[in-house]
Amino acid sequence: MFCRDLTGQVPGEAALATSNAASPDSFFTENGQTMKTNQSWGGRFAEGPKEAVAQYTDSQSYDRALYAQDIRASQAHARMLGRQGVISQNEARILVNGLDRVREEIEAGNFVWKPELEDVHMNIEARLTELVGDVGKKLHTGRSRNDQVGLTFRLFVADRLETWRQRAALLCSVLADKAAEHKTDILPGCTHLQPAQPVSLAHHLLAYAWMFRRDAMRLEDTLERVRISPLGAAALAGTTYPLDPQSVADEVGFAEIYGNSMDAVSDRDFVLEALFDGSTIMMHLSRLCEEIILWANPAFGFVRLSDGYSTGSSIMPQKKNPDVAELMRGKTGRVYGALTGLLTVMKGLPLAYNRDMQEDKEGFLDADRTVEASLRLMAGMLEELTFRTDRMREACKAGFLNATELADYLVGKGIPFREAHHITGQAVAMAEKAGKGLEDLTLGELQSLEPRIDDSVFAILEYAAAVSRRETPGGTGPRSVETQLEQIHQWLGQNLGEEN
Image (cartoon, rainbow, N blue to C red; front, side, top):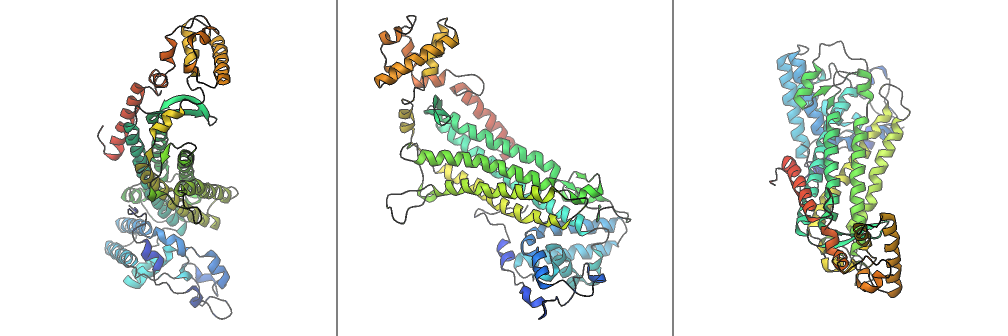
């Protein structure tokens, strides 16, 4: 798998970035004409593209990130060609071994990337041919760059989505662990960002755990459609060679092959779905960031950020800014932009492949870096976040969070809910005018509104009691929270190997 290490860097990424590639300028003559045509399609051309055109259409500067997947797909293709008798078994072995050597050069940082070869695919094939001779020219038999690119990019997207899925599950685990630590702590639950009802901190944190669980499950579902191999579709119409596309799909770990060759080479739904999944993850992260930012403000004072996930001010010595959360909230727009951009690219394309589709990769590569890093950083930030539960509990006294308890109490006395709602509203107005909470009103004051109220009402008005009484499925009551934790941990056990 093309995984990142703990620093977030893809293995070999530094080598890709610092490879001793020749300067693009070295491939052009003084009049801006390329010195030679591209070997993959130059047969009918008398000269190569203009320098500005070559630079404009170049993709090897970024799609080299797909080198491992391209080599993996090409090796599977070569083995299949050998099995099918399109090339000899010995030639297939030479191609597979030669591709191993190419991969070793890339990962060692010794590979020379050539801009005039346009993309990662032709760079790898050209170097393979240099290493193994004319046998290397047989690798492309029975395929087009259209289906080659499709399979390579699907493999890359699948690898990255699996990493996102693991990161989302790990973040879900961190939230569940934090929730387990705060089952008895309460804070104001809000609607419209106004105090509504008291909830447990565990319940609040588990709301986000359920979001990231859905994200992980959504990615797993998307992966089923990503893992469909287009190899064998060739340019658009299939091929006359006796290929076995399913065997290639099996070798690379894909369950299915394309159903229609034109759709196979022109489909970018798999990237769009991936970017939608990434956008949803970022939306969930952004919501959590917003709450962390608000809660870190002294006006709330619900959390204390660790130094490692904060920054200061160049002029105000006292400042401790939630910059990681703010940037994460802002970077959400980058991922949305990648999704919107690719939707716009695809909306007017006739069948089948069009060069516009080259624009699918830079947006996804950027989104991948953003999503993966954001999930990783959020997990770290939460692990070091301090919850000021005393401030949370104190905040429950503002905003009449126990008003619904009084209304429900009156319903228990046989009063219809709409009437109970109206009486409670009068009690809130009375308390607000007196500058105190509902729980601070005297029995006489409450009975002036409804004589059936007795002194049992004061136990009902306790904020902790309001939380503990809500035991409906998915509610904030302690038994419900325990059930949620059990469900989350059961799912994590299936996805991260955790024990309940």
